[in-house]
Each structure stands twice: as C-alpha cells, then as structure tokens.
Image 1: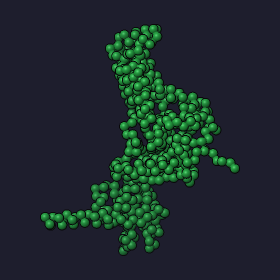
Image 2: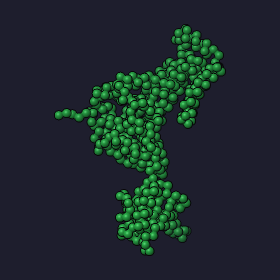
Image 3: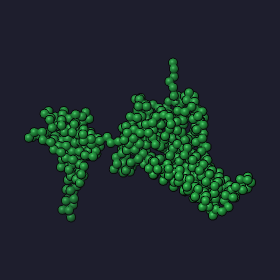
Image 4: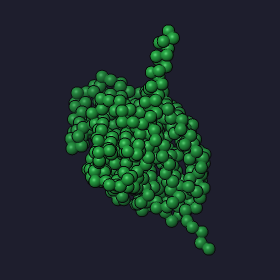
Length: 491
C-alpha cells in the first residue's frame, strides 16, 4: 500500500511538473492526436535551432510564411525577436499561458540557444462581409449590421461614437468555449449601478459553453421563467449606438452578430430604428399602429371565441345569422376550431423560416391560402374565423422584435383558453394577469414597465408616440443617466 501511494504521488508530481514547465516535449504530449497541431524545426546554424508550434486551423498561414518563417530562416541577429516582422510579440513563461496563446491563434517560437519562448499573434480572421440586417429591416437609414467578429463590431460602434468616454471591457465566459464578452458603456453618462450590476452578473456565470448572446442573457436575466425578454437583442450598430447615447449598456458576444442591450422596458420592444428617421407625425402614427396591432393579435381570436361561446346574445342579429350559417356544419366547438387553425399558422410560420429564402416566402403565402381554403371547404373552419386568423397573424408581424413575436403567440393562446372558459371576463382576467406580470419584471434591476409604472411624465414624449426631435432635449429619466440634458449649455 505504501509503494502504491508513493507511485500515485510520483505520477501526480510528474503530471504537475509537465503542466507547469514549458517544453517541446510537454506540448507534443499535450497536443497528441491533434491533426492540426504543427511542430516545425528550423536550423539557422549548426548550434542554433528555432522551433515553431502552432495550430494550423487557427492561424493565417500566408502571414506565417511572410512574418516568421522567411525572417527567421535568414536571421543573423543574436535575438530572434529582432528578426520577426510583428510588433505584438510577447514572452511566454509558463505552460498554461502557452496553451492559451496557441488556441487564441498565436504561433509559439522557441530559441534553443537562448532558451527563450515567444508568442506571435497570427489569428486567422475568418468572417463574412458586412451585410444588411435580416431581422430588423428598414427602408431608410444605415444598412450595415454586426458580424460574428467582436472586434469588427466594436469598430462599427466606435465609428458612430468617436469619443474617449466610450469604454469597452472584456470578460471571458465558458470554461470550455472561453467566449469573449465585451461590455460597452459611456463613462460619465451611464449610471454606474448598471455597470456594476452587469459586471456582477457576468462574474457569477458558471457554465462551460457559450455560442450565442441569448445564452449569456439566460444566465443574467432576473426572471428566468418569463416569456418576455429582459435584454434587447439587435444586430444593428445604429441601434446600439443610440442606446449607448441614452445611457444603456451593451454586451457584445464573440461568434454571434447579436448584441445585448439593457436595461430595456416593455415599450422598447415596439420601437424601430426608422422611428427616428421618419417625420415625427408619421413615426408616431406607425408606432400607434404597432400597439394597436399587438392588442389585435392577442385579443381578436379570443374575442371571437368568447362571443360565439358565451355571449352570442351580444352579436347583432344580421351578424349572428352569418355566424350561424358559417358554423352550422362544423364538427368542432369555437375553441377547438380556433386552436387548430392557430397551430396550423404557427407550423406554416416556422416552416417558412426554416426553408431556403426563395422558397420560404412562397411556402408561407401559398400554404396559408391552400390550408385556409381547404379547411373551409372540408368543414373544419368557418369563413369568419379564417378572416380573423389572417388579420391577427398579419398584425403580429408589425412587432419589430422577433422575441416579442414569440411571446405574442403564447399570450394569444393563454387568452384563448381563458375566453373559452369564462368568456369576456376571462379575457379581462388574462389581460390583468399579463399587466401584473409585466409590472413585476425588471431588467438589470430596473422596472420593466416604466415609464408607465413607475410613472415618468416627461418620458411619454417617446413612448406611445415619437415626439419631435427638437423637443426631445432630455434623456429618459427612467434610465437614470448621469447627464440628463442632450445638449451643451451655452455661455
């Protein structure tokens, strides 16, 4: 037993030594069975050799030849560092740091004559070109959008906010993915409580893999079971820049084009970048249309079910005769008729999103027409319900935020159940429950239903309407900015 214990201890010591001491043998052992790990030996002279270690798939191999291999091969200077064409060379003292540098896209150089380890960054900048946003399309305004490169995304924001007060702090989340998360805010404008809250939440994340900003948001939200997003996801740099200018914070996550903006309110999800481009009267009209469409999309079909199930005496006689004639041969109750049609609409909607772009739109249009017409002719749905479903579905598309659109479908289903059980009273109870839930939510500890509750009178100029820009001289009070005024005081 004593011999076995000593053997285990010796193995542990050997393993810790291997992990702490940096050597070619230790790296080869660590990167065993990795096909893309390269170990290159360059003979400069009879007594001097240079070893290169890199991961082939993570570096730019053209730059490797130009900035390292050719200069090192022809190097005649005492220090190999003086021959390399790169200004970002750093010394690597320990094994763990060497592994981090390799996986970040660097090349390790070992000069055997000087026993010196160097790291040269040659990261392969894979990425797509800047394209137009597909989730937040507008007719006027900027056409660029974020990409999966976090450094490029920071550039797009700094071009719009060329001020030194714009801070960018980097964090790493995910024990396996080691995903870079950049916190951006304007120092002297953004409330420090927002910044400290976000830093605290990021530091408390304990998970292994992060590949999307929504996964980061899931660990930072204060109400995990709510259907309403507490972070706004956007891939538009102009939206992020405008939000930073109001006093919000932004999180950029590497390998995803969607940034996180907070704190937000329920009403921010109905605002579009085009609101601040159109004339204020037009923008106000369009914003009111969005709110009306939202209410219609969640209440129209439940209202139809409530009337036809519990309150048919409230329907005018001529309209009632049309409904009776339309529903006389249907085998389902109004609830099941509406429920089945809504499920069909959701199936068509999801299928059109998953199909290729050119066929997806055709599938949505033709599928809706064919299914609706076939359902009426087969006697599974009434003409009136098909009209209602069409109006509510089209109305739901006016909501600018995609996550809010999904929450909209769930609210519609909930009100549908309530209306079938309790009629109009059920719809009223459901709306009260939704409002109470919204009033209980928060985004990084800020009220989700402000500026309605708590009430901020001045902020209503950019709530249900968008007031004239020349009148919006103060930032929203509910964001608690350190600088409330949006203009410089003249002497």
